[in-house]
Image (tube, rainbow, N blue to C red; front, side, top):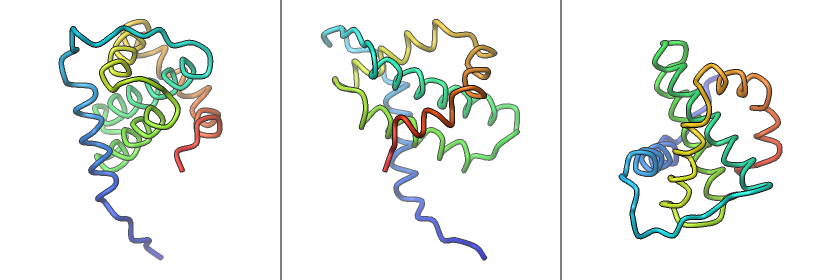
Length: 122
């Protein structure tokens, strides 16, 4: 039996993710250092986002699955990381630059399930 899923929340999350990750950094935004639980949430968000993009580029998942994963990324950042979106975006850029794509994909294999338990989005 097919389930009907509203695409509006996914679309909003995807657009938020695109805006978050593609907007140039704001020079006036105060820098913020994330530690502990927030740093772990950032790592989970980074892992999900990069994996979604990599799997989609390799045609291993469709646009719908990619959009759901990106939506989860936005929800994790929104619910579990303090600061402005500019600060969160800057932290995600730093996290992205510190990890290689193969390392991030390995992170996904090891921690994705735990991320969703540790940082619920509902």
